[in-house]
Image (cartoon, rainbow, N blue to C red; front, side):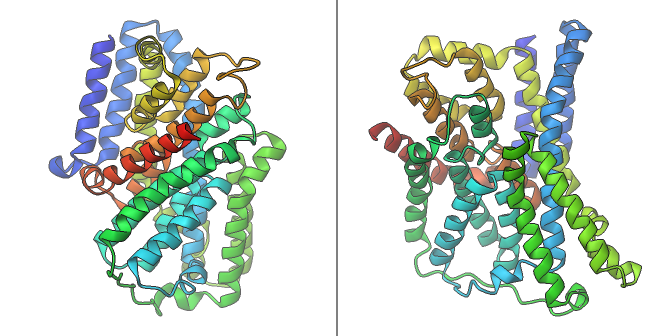
Length: 423
């Protein structure tokens, strides 16, 4: 069963990687792969057990999907009111290197406060307002994925895996001073490398659109929706901390509040104009294929976890490698191929929290796991939630990412890992 499961997963991964060659949307491949792997599982096991396993995974997957839907809708709502002009109008530089450093810094710190997925969605929308060239847009988006994952790794609420470790008691707020320097190195090293490559180059800014939906929005409406949108996103980690409910609940609450506000401020407009500036209009513009791609990928990875493959892999790593630094570095590489959530969950299940030593709260193993699992996913575009979201929104090609971004992600990842070990 294991061989068949791995074969189907690998085949699906192959078709996703070479989407541009086969001309088959990756969302379709991901859905087929996700369903087939579970079909294999149920064929070799008791369907009642598999049904419970699937239900368990569906809860976790549903949380991510609803979170993604809520965040994408809020971002689209801000965009429909041209709210991002408040930021883009202040970014005057056309120097590619300066812009990379400015946006990467914003992304790095935003992802620690919001989380890397939300920040990646916001930056994907923002970049389209700043950069006209398709090639430059994709390259900047790739760097933003690195910055978002690096920023999320040093915050207890910056990434799904750090949230898991925080809630599980493996780390505390001490993760911030422990990981912030390696995480900063993880993005600074690629930026220094790229600064030489892009030295002297400029970006072409898209022309400001004066017509269309712009005439339906007055400055007051733009400002209020932008402010409420940003506050709504910032409210999500606060809501989780206060109520201990999953992050998607806070996201849905923010979306519901914004929905009411837009209905009120646009109630005097005709239905056509009102539709484009309220949540129903925003929902119609969302790339649904991104959500289905997420669903398929997470289903497929969940089947590997339920099939015992990921846990077996964790045990093999422990037996063959043994060294906690090398184990975590390898887990980081694996998280580029597989979802980092089940990998971290497997590690949490394998090792108990001790009262002292490397496996104690805020011990070396857990801190380094947070860094490696959080930033290792940047090596491939589908290795992190942030990467998958941007890939769907901007239609980034898998192979293009490997050719243009993966090396930058690798040198940043290894440099940050070396920094943590040295410190």
